[in-house]
Length: 626
Image 1 (spheres, rainbow, N blue to C red):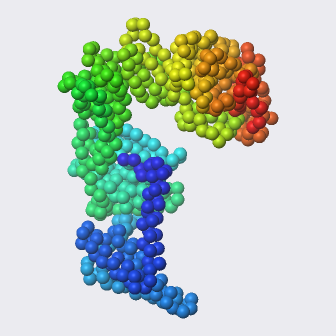
Image 2: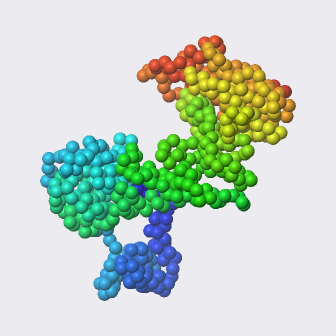
């Protein structure tokens, strides 16, 4: 199960705000009440305690309101007194008196006030330490000599303790355990801490009864040194106290949360973890247009999960077999991330699916009333080269093509306007206070190969309704760039081009990067006028340009400017103001540029952000001021 601290920050902040409000509000309200109403508030809180106890068998939430009532009434009494000393003494005396009355009320009514119990642990003399460590250890081995399978293992934070998921030889799965573990000598109990960024707990698994005990209040054990048939001995926080504790297993499980195991295929999963897995999975097939065939699905699990390399994958990423008009397809689709699109006439649909006996090999499939099922070639992998792209999914199905939508990533520099080109953001990019969205492209895959239709990639349409279309030629492996031919409005653009592009905010222009064969690197940017179909070139040569954003008449991009020593004595970290003065080498002539970009130990190529603007009908480089 996911640790609460792994939740998004907005969720954690909301929970923190609600918890603070729960603690503060009961004390704030009575401060503004006159004495008679403060008395009524306190009496009402006492009555609420009694009602909660009778309803739920314990007092939990209303206890803090009772304390707030005591505080508010004491404050009201203190305000009646003249003089600071008298007010303080009267308020303290009233508060203690009210707490005494509450204790009498608790005993009289037999209320069970919820208080955090002391963990049933005791200090112990250090013993010979095992090789168990919260920071990692060899795979646990049962007393029978069988190794557990480690399904997943990750650090809480860099260099921090380790959280592991274990698969036992009998199919039992224990999630969120620690790397420090222990078995009782008779093999009945498996013991492990439950690491967390906050409060640690303890897990005890009864292997005979298949019951998991979650001892959430037992925080003493970070590392397990010894487990006998009746006791657990271990240490707390080796990086601080490293104190040794011992506890009786019977006492621990008596106060623990008891959890049965749920059988799923040939696995046994704790009920709470299974409920969490089920809650994450609930996608359904999209409703078809009027007249569409009936589509249902049948949940699918392999005969054996233990036999898989990743036994939990079919549970966390469940698949279902598609059934069309009552006929099973033999194809599996993801029920969590369904990729599915209908044709407008309702006589066909397409989806991302796997053959039932090849679960790890996904592909595009279409079904239509005339031909039934047909596999569609996946086409060129757009995401394998720069500019990096992420696949958004299937967006349209026509008579001849299936459309897959992708989003291009945005190049970012190490120091904002200067530095290494060390990341590509899959998010909007802000430049000079303006936000530029990622470009969206559409990959059009032919439904039938060899019938005259070809694969193409389309930009978003310009103002005249026409997109630029790219047709793949080859990959320049040295630069990790795909090379294309381009057409616009039925006319071919002369030369070879990269996929990198940006459409202006007005939709009138589209910027394109021309390809250059070895020994050169791409160094020319063109701007296509959507109204005339004419190309205008930025006058300056800009080595390895990568586009970022296009305003109405200003194009932003980054380009290679030189090398900087990043060795032990070099200026590894530079501010934008220092950057231009610290280049060791400027870019050489175009014919030497590709060799200049080759990797060198102790030296890194650096880029700068620039812009070109349209002035008097020409695109010119704007003055570079970092």
